[in-house]
Amino acid sequence: MRGKRKRIMDRIESPRTDDSAIEQEIRAKGLTAPRVTPADIESNIASESYFTASDGRSGALAAGTYVGRESPQENDTDIDALSLLTFCVLAMRNGFTVVGESACASPENFDAALGRKIARANAVNKIWPLMGYELKQRLSNIAPE
Image 1 (spheres, rainbow, N blue to C red):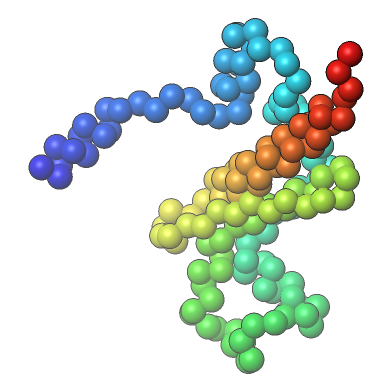
Image 2 (tube, rainbow, N blue to C red; image 1 turned 120 degrees about the vertical axis):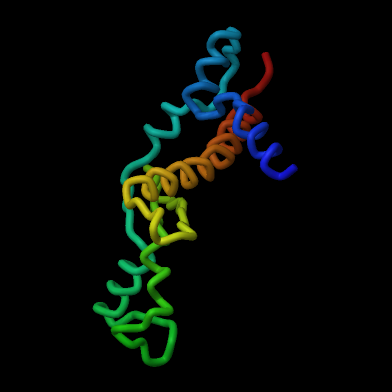
């Protein structure tokens, strides 16, 4: 039964839910009220930085700011997983920062470019509600005529 379920699941196609597809659908339906768009999100990102947890640990050790195990050892295998955790830090134009992450369970599947892409998408997903709140706040301050 399990194999049959997998074959059925393999044939199910999910609708596109990426930001550009949703924006396309909104425009096609003629929905023109104020809203946050993917372009708004992108125009509010001032910079982006990517690194792995291993990179962060190494940098903190080099800077003398590491907080963690009392005596980290250079050949510790328990910290190998840190190289499978990718962070994306998006600095917004107003100075606020948003962090996205991507973790890979199997080292054999790790792909740095894909990890950065997923981490960035996760960071961008955190921006939507922030900018939505900001837009709603601005709209609520508009006096009705």
